Length: 202
Image 1: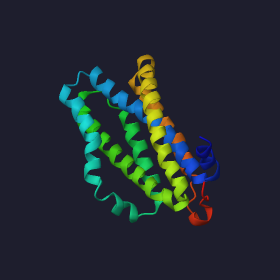
Image 2: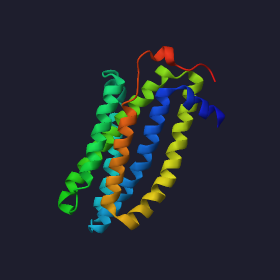
Image 3: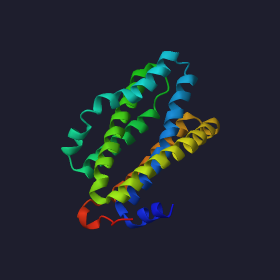
Image 4: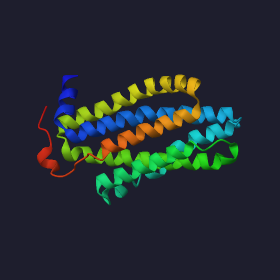
């Protein structure tokens, strides 16, 4: 635990990425639960609910072989910023879906958000070795798994309770607000002089 704290203290870029990632991962589950709840409330057929789950992961299959090529062609911060804005827009669009007539739009939004999220995560992963030494990089990878588990557990539980009392639209709005807050954290990233700023061995 002490080593994780040391990593967060001594690497500003990672601290910012960790903070933004933690907030976004937590907010993500509000949209996931919100979409499923929305479809149930609208009386969607089973295949529609299944389709949303499928299109959430299909983009990863097609992007996997070319992720590295796309990331290498762009500077990390502009690409991460663009993907983050894309996710924010897709979340905002969810607020206006109130009918099964817009099921096609919902599926499109899920695909777009999945693509943007995948590219963001890939860019982040490829950037970490540029400002973290190998021991710290190992800790960063461990922390990614830890925060995913924590945010999944508490995010899903909190989303269910929140939606029960405040509704689906409020869940989408909350997710959007969390992403906006995280966006301003992301803007503070500084990838200049990466090698000089990389922390030493743990």
